[in-house]
Image (tube, rainbow, N blue to C red; front, side, top):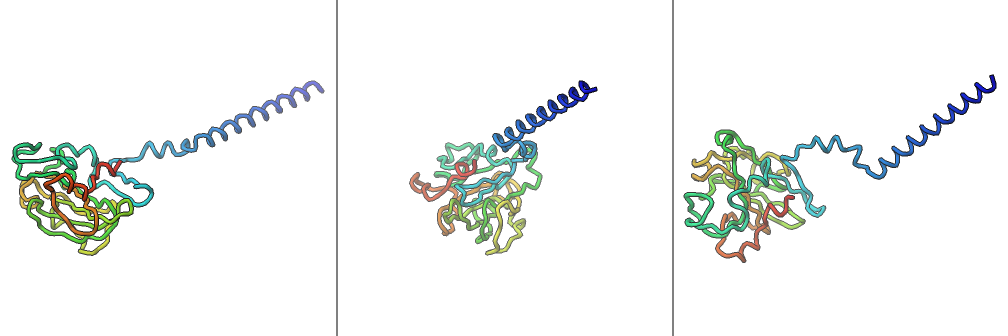
Length: 223
């Protein structure tokens, strides 16, 4: 009888020791890799319309889903002329002050939503030669004042009023129909330019490389 009691006691003690070691190991594992608990959440994040933090100062958001992979024809700073251009026919010349986000073939007859890339008021919306519908927003990027131009929009789709504040990632409007008055007869795409300072400068091209210093390349900021 005494042997049976001793055996049960030893067995119970072994179970307690093994359980304690197992719990201690798991606790240390979580401390060493605190992302373990968030892994399932992170793996399910849809980053097609993502937002990035710039040096912990300001938020910048993608203006269109799958933004970076759409920059295939006219990136920032490319030199364009009617004779040398990835677009034909070409009617512009100079160094590109913004980035062009192209549309997919199946989007030509669909409504393609455009979003504000930052927080700030809408200060301009009207028809502009070369753009069709255009909107300008005042923001801060990397703690510096900028104006952001969104070109080739359906002007009537911009619901926000002038001087109305718009939050980053908020819907701004939809792209205009390609080769129509809505895009001033340009292909269906978004031109996004970021100009330093509060002055509204809607030029899509400048004539010297030094003038590009007054502009910011979206692709280098959104990573």
